[in-house]
Amino acid sequence: MRVTHKSITYKAIVNMQRSLRQVEGKTDEISTGRKISLPSDDPSQATRALGYQQKIAQSQQYSRNMDTVVDRLNQTESALGEINGSVVQIKEIALTLKDPSITAEELNNAFEKLSQLKEQLVKLGNTKVGDQYIFGGSNTTSRSFELTDDGQILYRGNTSEINVEMGDNISITTNIPGTTIFSMQATTAGIITDNGVFGSLDTLMQVAQGGEPPADFDNVLDEIDGLNNTVINARAINSNRGFRAESAQESLSAEQTSVEGVLASIMETDTALALTELLSLQEAYQLTLNVVNKSFQRSLVDVLG
Image (cartoon, rainbow, N blue to C red):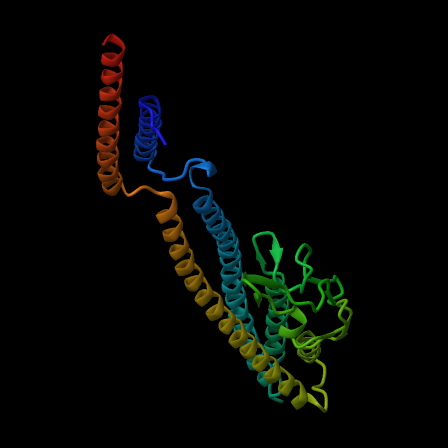
Protein backbone atom coordinates (compact mmCIF):
# COMPACT_ATOMS: atom_id res chain seq x y z
CA MET A 1 0.00 0.00 0.00
CA ARG A 2 1.42 3.31 -1.08
CA VAL A 3 1.54 5.98 1.62
CA THR A 4 1.25 9.38 0.03
CA HIS A 5 2.99 12.47 1.24
CA LYS A 6 -0.42 14.07 1.63
CA SER A 7 -1.59 11.42 4.13
CA ILE A 8 1.62 11.78 6.13
CA THR A 9 1.11 15.52 6.28
CA TYR A 10 -2.53 15.08 7.33
CA LYS A 11 -1.59 12.74 10.20
CA ALA A 12 1.10 15.15 11.32
CA ILE A 13 -1.44 17.98 11.46
CA VAL A 14 -3.89 15.81 13.45
CA ASN A 15 -1.12 14.95 15.92
CA MET A 16 -0.17 18.60 16.19
CA GLN A 17 -3.76 19.62 16.95
CA ARG A 18 -4.07 16.88 19.56
CA SER A 19 -0.81 17.97 21.19
CA LEU A 20 -2.01 21.57 21.19
CA ARG A 21 -5.28 20.57 22.91
CA GLN A 22 -3.29 18.66 25.53
CA VAL A 23 -1.07 21.69 26.16
CA GLU A 24 -4.12 23.95 26.44
CA GLY A 25 -5.87 21.47 28.74
CA LYS A 26 -2.87 21.17 31.05
CA THR A 27 -2.47 24.97 31.07
CA ASP A 28 -6.13 25.36 32.09
CA GLU A 29 -5.67 22.71 34.78
CA ILE A 30 -2.75 24.64 36.28
CA SER A 31 -4.55 27.99 36.12
CA THR A 32 -7.77 26.67 37.72
CA GLY A 33 -6.10 24.23 40.10
CA ARG A 34 -8.59 21.54 39.07
CA LYS A 35 -8.03 18.40 37.04
CA ILE A 36 -11.70 18.15 36.11
CA SER A 37 -13.71 21.24 35.22
CA LEU A 38 -16.31 19.45 33.10
CA PRO A 39 -17.51 15.82 33.22
CA SER A 40 -16.27 15.44 29.65
CA ASP A 41 -12.71 16.14 30.83
CA ASP A 42 -12.59 12.65 32.38
CA PRO A 43 -16.00 10.90 32.56
CA SER A 44 -14.75 8.01 34.70
CA GLN A 45 -13.06 10.20 37.31
CA ALA A 46 -15.93 12.69 37.20
CA THR A 47 -18.33 9.87 38.14
CA ARG A 48 -16.07 8.87 41.04
CA ALA A 49 -15.86 12.48 42.18
CA LEU A 50 -19.65 12.83 42.12
CA GLY A 51 -19.98 9.77 44.36
CA TYR A 52 -17.50 11.19 46.86
CA GLN A 53 -19.21 14.60 46.79
CA GLN A 54 -22.53 12.95 47.62
CA LYS A 55 -20.88 11.04 50.47
CA ILE A 56 -19.40 14.26 51.85
CA ALA A 57 -22.79 15.99 51.66
CA GLN A 58 -24.35 13.11 53.59
CA SER A 59 -21.55 13.21 56.17
CA GLN A 60 -22.08 16.94 56.61
CA GLN A 61 -25.77 16.31 57.30
CA TYR A 62 -24.88 13.65 59.86
CA SER A 63 -22.40 16.09 61.39
CA ARG A 64 -25.11 18.74 61.75
CA ASN A 65 -27.33 16.09 63.34
CA MET A 66 -24.58 15.24 65.81
CA ASP A 67 -24.06 18.89 66.74
CA THR A 68 -27.76 19.12 67.57
CA VAL A 69 -27.69 15.82 69.47
CA VAL A 70 -24.66 16.77 71.58
CA ASP A 71 -26.19 20.16 72.42
CA ARG A 72 -29.47 18.49 73.40
CA LEU A 73 -27.74 15.88 75.57
CA ASN A 74 -25.62 18.54 77.28
CA GLN A 75 -28.72 20.59 78.09
CA THR A 76 -30.45 17.44 79.34
CA GLU A 77 -27.53 16.69 81.66
CA SER A 78 -27.59 20.24 83.01
CA ALA A 79 -31.34 20.05 83.72
CA LEU A 80 -31.07 16.58 85.29
CA GLY A 81 -28.30 17.84 87.56
CA GLU A 82 -30.55 20.62 88.83
CA ILE A 83 -33.49 18.22 89.23
CA ASN A 84 -31.22 15.93 91.23
CA GLY A 85 -30.30 18.83 93.51
CA SER A 86 -33.96 19.74 94.00
CA VAL A 87 -34.85 16.16 94.94
CA VAL A 88 -32.10 16.13 97.56
CA GLN A 89 -33.59 19.29 99.08
CA ILE A 90 -37.07 17.73 99.07
CA LYS A 91 -35.72 14.72 100.95
CA GLU A 92 -34.07 16.97 103.54
CA ILE A 93 -37.32 18.88 104.11
CA ALA A 94 -39.29 15.63 104.31
CA LEU A 95 -37.04 14.42 107.12
CA THR A 96 -37.61 17.64 109.09
CA LEU A 97 -41.39 17.25 108.67
CA LYS A 98 -41.14 13.84 110.27
CA ASP A 99 -39.75 15.41 113.45
CA PRO A 100 -42.65 15.73 115.97
CA SER A 101 -40.96 18.73 117.63
CA ILE A 102 -41.04 20.87 114.48
CA THR A 103 -42.29 24.43 115.13
CA ALA A 104 -45.02 26.35 113.31
CA GLU A 105 -42.42 28.70 111.84
CA GLU A 106 -40.40 25.76 110.54
CA LEU A 107 -43.55 24.28 109.03
CA ASN A 108 -44.29 27.56 107.26
CA ASN A 109 -40.72 27.79 105.96
CA ALA A 110 -40.93 24.18 104.77
CA PHE A 111 -44.17 24.91 102.91
CA GLU A 112 -42.68 27.96 101.19
CA LYS A 113 -39.57 26.04 100.18
CA LEU A 114 -41.58 23.07 98.89
CA SER A 115 -43.74 25.43 96.83
CA GLN A 116 -40.62 26.95 95.31
CA LEU A 117 -39.17 23.51 94.57
CA LYS A 118 -42.40 22.46 92.88
CA GLU A 119 -42.27 25.51 90.63
CA GLN A 120 -38.57 24.87 90.01
CA LEU A 121 -39.22 21.28 88.93
CA VAL A 122 -41.94 22.42 86.54
CA LYS A 123 -39.56 25.02 85.12
CA LEU A 124 -36.83 22.39 84.66
CA GLY A 125 -39.38 20.07 83.09
CA ASN A 126 -39.91 22.79 80.48
CA THR A 127 -36.22 23.09 79.58
CA LYS A 128 -35.69 24.04 75.94
CA VAL A 129 -32.89 23.67 73.42
CA GLY A 130 -33.40 26.38 70.88
CA ASP A 131 -37.15 26.41 70.33
CA GLN A 132 -37.69 22.76 71.31
CA TYR A 133 -38.82 21.41 74.68
CA ILE A 134 -36.68 18.41 75.57
CA PHE A 135 -38.82 16.57 78.15
CA GLY A 136 -42.12 16.34 76.24
CA GLY A 137 -41.40 13.15 74.32
CA SER A 138 -41.88 13.76 70.61
CA ASN A 139 -43.99 16.86 71.35
CA THR A 140 -41.25 19.48 71.28
CA THR A 141 -43.27 22.53 70.24
CA SER A 142 -45.34 23.18 73.38
CA ARG A 143 -44.59 23.35 77.09
CA SER A 144 -44.17 19.88 78.58
CA PHE A 145 -45.56 20.71 82.03
CA GLU A 146 -48.11 23.16 83.33
CA LEU A 147 -48.75 24.15 86.94
CA THR A 148 -52.39 25.19 87.28
CA ASP A 149 -53.69 27.84 89.67
CA ASP A 150 -54.98 25.15 92.03
CA GLY A 151 -51.58 23.43 92.15
CA GLN A 152 -52.32 20.58 89.73
CA ILE A 153 -49.64 19.33 87.34
CA LEU A 154 -50.58 18.79 83.71
CA TYR A 155 -48.30 16.98 81.27
CA ARG A 156 -48.60 18.22 77.68
CA GLY A 157 -46.10 15.81 76.15
CA ASN A 158 -46.13 12.10 75.41
CA THR A 159 -43.90 9.12 76.15
CA SER A 160 -42.35 8.79 72.68
CA GLU A 161 -38.61 8.74 72.05
CA ILE A 162 -36.79 10.86 69.47
CA ASN A 163 -34.19 9.05 67.38
CA VAL A 164 -31.68 10.89 65.21
CA GLU A 165 -29.55 9.36 62.45
CA MET A 166 -25.83 9.70 63.07
CA GLY A 167 -24.62 7.39 60.29
CA ASP A 168 -25.74 4.82 57.76
CA ASN A 169 -28.30 2.62 59.56
CA ILE A 170 -27.14 4.06 62.91
CA SER A 171 -29.31 6.22 65.15
CA ILE A 172 -29.30 7.48 68.72
CA THR A 173 -32.13 8.27 71.14
CA THR A 174 -31.83 11.89 72.25
CA ASN A 175 -34.57 12.35 74.83
CA ILE A 176 -35.99 11.05 78.10
CA PRO A 177 -39.71 11.80 78.55
CA GLY A 178 -40.53 13.96 81.56
CA THR A 179 -42.84 11.29 82.94
CA THR A 180 -39.85 8.97 83.31
CA ILE A 181 -37.69 11.57 85.03
CA PHE A 182 -40.37 12.51 87.56
CA SER A 183 -41.49 8.90 88.13
CA MET A 184 -44.92 9.71 86.74
CA GLN A 185 -47.19 7.16 85.11
CA ALA A 186 -48.83 8.21 81.87
CA THR A 187 -50.44 6.75 78.79
CA THR A 188 -48.59 7.04 75.48
CA ALA A 189 -50.73 10.11 74.77
CA GLY A 190 -49.46 11.75 77.97
CA ILE A 191 -52.54 11.34 80.20
CA ILE A 192 -51.27 11.22 83.81
CA THR A 193 -52.30 8.25 85.93
CA ASP A 194 -49.74 8.79 88.73
CA ASN A 195 -48.22 12.16 89.63
CA GLY A 196 -44.96 10.64 90.86
CA VAL A 197 -42.74 13.18 92.60
CA PHE A 198 -45.41 15.85 92.36
CA GLY A 199 -47.80 13.61 94.29
CA SER A 200 -45.16 13.18 96.99
CA LEU A 201 -44.59 16.94 97.01
CA ASP A 202 -48.30 17.59 97.49
CA THR A 203 -48.33 15.21 100.46
CA LEU A 204 -45.37 17.00 102.04
CA MET A 205 -46.96 20.40 101.44
CA GLN A 206 -50.15 19.24 103.18
CA VAL A 207 -48.09 18.15 106.19
CA ALA A 208 -46.24 21.49 106.16
CA GLN A 209 -49.59 23.29 106.29
CA GLY A 210 -50.28 21.68 109.63
CA GLY A 211 -51.63 18.32 108.63
CA GLU A 212 -50.63 15.15 110.37
CA PRO A 213 -48.02 13.02 108.59
CA PRO A 214 -49.87 10.09 106.99
CA ALA A 215 -49.39 6.61 108.39
CA ASP A 216 -47.46 5.67 105.27
CA PHE A 217 -45.15 8.70 105.52
CA ASP A 218 -42.14 6.41 105.29
CA ASN A 219 -43.46 5.30 101.91
CA VAL A 220 -43.35 8.92 100.79
CA LEU A 221 -39.71 9.08 101.83
CA ASP A 222 -39.07 5.87 99.90
CA GLU A 223 -40.75 7.38 96.83
CA ILE A 224 -38.45 10.39 97.04
CA ASP A 225 -35.43 8.07 97.33
CA GLY A 226 -36.76 6.18 94.33
CA LEU A 227 -37.06 9.41 92.37
CA ASN A 228 -33.48 10.28 93.25
CA ASN A 229 -32.36 6.90 91.90
CA THR A 230 -34.46 7.44 88.77
CA VAL A 231 -32.77 10.77 88.09
CA ILE A 232 -29.33 9.25 88.70
CA ASN A 233 -30.13 6.44 86.25
CA ALA A 234 -31.41 8.97 83.72
CA ARG A 235 -28.15 10.89 84.00
CA ALA A 236 -26.19 7.68 83.44
CA ILE A 237 -28.24 6.87 80.33
CA ASN A 238 -27.86 10.41 79.04
CA SER A 239 -24.12 10.37 79.73
CA ASN A 240 -23.71 7.12 77.80
CA ARG A 241 -25.59 8.61 74.87
CA GLY A 242 -23.34 11.65 75.01
CA PHE A 243 -20.27 9.42 74.87
CA ARG A 244 -21.69 7.57 71.85
CA ALA A 245 -22.53 10.85 70.11
CA GLU A 246 -19.07 12.32 70.67
CA SER A 247 -17.42 9.09 69.50
CA ALA A 248 -19.62 9.14 66.40
CA GLN A 249 -18.63 12.76 65.80
CA GLU A 250 -14.94 11.87 65.92
CA SER A 251 -15.37 8.88 63.59
CA LEU A 252 -17.50 10.93 61.21
CA SER A 253 -14.94 13.72 61.15
CA ALA A 254 -12.10 11.29 60.43
CA GLU A 255 -14.09 9.59 57.66
CA GLN A 256 -15.04 12.92 56.10
CA THR A 257 -11.41 14.07 56.15
CA SER A 258 -10.39 10.84 54.41
CA VAL A 259 -13.08 11.17 51.73
CA GLU A 260 -12.21 14.83 51.17
CA GLY A 261 -8.59 13.76 50.66
CA VAL A 262 -9.58 11.20 48.02
CA LEU A 263 -11.82 13.75 46.30
CA ALA A 264 -9.00 16.28 46.31
CA SER A 265 -6.68 13.74 44.68
CA ILE A 266 -9.25 13.33 41.91
CA MET A 267 -10.22 16.96 41.44
CA GLU A 268 -7.29 19.11 42.55
CA THR A 269 -4.10 19.63 40.61
CA ASP A 270 -0.65 18.77 41.91
CA THR A 271 0.93 21.96 40.56
CA ALA A 272 4.53 20.73 40.58
CA LEU A 273 3.60 17.52 38.75
CA ALA A 274 1.32 19.39 36.35
CA LEU A 275 4.12 21.82 35.44
CA THR A 276 6.43 18.90 34.67
CA GLU A 277 3.72 17.30 32.52
CA LEU A 278 3.12 20.63 30.76
CA LEU A 279 6.80 20.90 29.82
CA SER A 280 6.69 17.38 28.36
CA LEU A 281 3.53 18.19 26.41
CA GLN A 282 5.04 21.42 25.12
CA GLU A 283 8.13 19.53 23.96
CA ALA A 284 5.94 16.94 22.23
CA TYR A 285 3.93 19.71 20.59
CA GLN A 286 7.09 21.45 19.41
CA LEU A 287 8.41 18.21 17.89
CA THR A 288 5.10 17.65 16.10
CA LEU A 289 5.13 21.25 14.91
CA ASN A 290 8.63 20.77 13.51
CA VAL A 291 7.49 17.66 11.64
CA VAL A 292 4.56 19.55 10.14
CA ASN A 293 6.80 22.47 9.14
CA LYS A 294 9.25 20.14 7.41
CA SER A 295 6.39 18.38 5.70
CA PHE A 296 5.03 21.66 4.36
CA GLN A 297 8.52 22.73 3.23
CA ARG A 298 8.92 19.46 1.32
CA SER A 299 5.50 19.86 -0.25
CA LEU A 300 6.41 23.37 -1.37
CA VAL A 301 9.67 22.14 -2.90
CA ASP A 302 7.78 19.42 -4.76
CA VAL A 303 5.34 21.98 -6.11
CA LEU A 304 8.04 24.42 -7.20
CA GLY A 305 10.23 21.67 -8.56
